[in-house]
Amino acid sequence: MAEYDYDLFVIGAGSGGVRAARLAAISGARVAVAEEHRVGGTCVIRGCVPKKFMVYASEYASHFKTAKAYGWTLGEPSFDWSAFLAEKDKEIARLSGIYVTNLQNAGAELVHAKARLLDAHTVELVGKERTVTAEKILIATGGRPWLPRGLEGIEHVITSDEAFHLERLPERMVIAGGGYIAVEFACIFKGLGVDVTLVHRGPNILRGFDDHVRAHLAEEMEKKGINVLLGSQHEKVEKTASGLVSHLTGGARVEADVVLFALGREAYVEGLGLEKAGVELTDGAIAVDAYSRTNVANIWAVGDVTNRINLTPVAIREGAAFAQTEFYGNPTTFDHEMVASAVFSQPAIGAVGMSEAEARHAGYKVDIYLSRFRAMKNTFAGGDERALIKLVVEQGSERILGCHVVAPDGPEIIQMAAIALKMGVTKPQWDATCAVHPTLAEELVTMREKHVPQELGAAA
Image 1 (cartoon, rainbow, N blue to C red):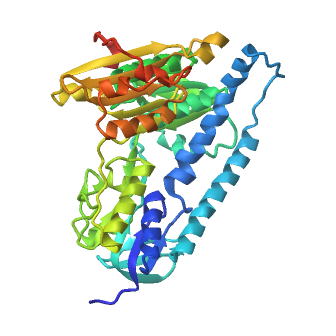
Image 2 (tube, rainbow, N blue to C red):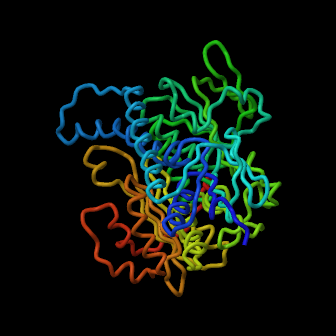
């Protein structure tokens, strides 16, 4: 057997890479991890965690209004963007430090450098004048924001990465995109008092989510004052003395202080030397099998760089499955079916399983249960925000194929619903569960009348 410097070399210290490295090191393996940026990856440094802090901050504007209806007397509230950023950055640094400590306590070596494959077993540490060898290599470099490089004026826009570090809060913002990142930032900045215009080329936001959910959220966003322009996209971005002008299809022009492009993400494979090791790509992402193994026998990949389900908990589970298989003699795969997801829009979305359209396209005959209502908290305060709950149920077996919740606590609710759907719960079993009253979630188990499908218009 060839002698290598390490049993495992991990490229990327995000959630998936760190989990795999820790478990492998705890088994007694010689493990090293290379990270070119800060430890923690997209989620901790420039994704889920700082974004959730921004969501919390932005929600206080509506909380203050609601509080008055409940008898609270408040002074005129104000928001300090710089103070918030300082506290946010402090917490991100703390969390990144925990990742570093956990790696070191497990016995893994951390190298702050970009890693590049020279062949299937050799890694160059760029800028360190050092090469190392490893028996096994795991690639966990995640994804990066995608930009249309040929668009005139693209150098003037920012991506979600820069949105976390704006020097000052803009008065006007244009956001390009209709996916969850674009929608979340539109709600965040609107909540912080920014005049927001969302520009999306499709007929409705959130492609891939249930059509009722998409239409409902678009309506709620517009009620909050977000200007949603559908069927439109950028032709160029022009810098002027007074700001940035977005030139859109059809001749429309929107001026703003900041233009944020959130048009999707791509696997971060640039400069990894994959071609030297013979690693194959599929649609720009690393191709892997059910065990996360690439076409090269000793190289694996997990997380967003494989473009399977690009969610942090999925990357963690894939990394753990890899470690169990390769270092504990316990062949393990992660089941990518029935994975719940959340969109931290306002109101938020929690979803698990199939949308109505997905179920019908898959050949299922389904019954739909749908409820739209104002939650009692908003009703009392005179608010008009409405919640939506939808179940997609297979006819005959009455198995619940999909559950969709649009409500402030939607992501919290969907975590528990996901357990039941993963176990194959049926509508009669669901209905046999006594409601918890008074809660928004009780609507899940009290819906009895089937919904009659109607035209959804722009949601199609």
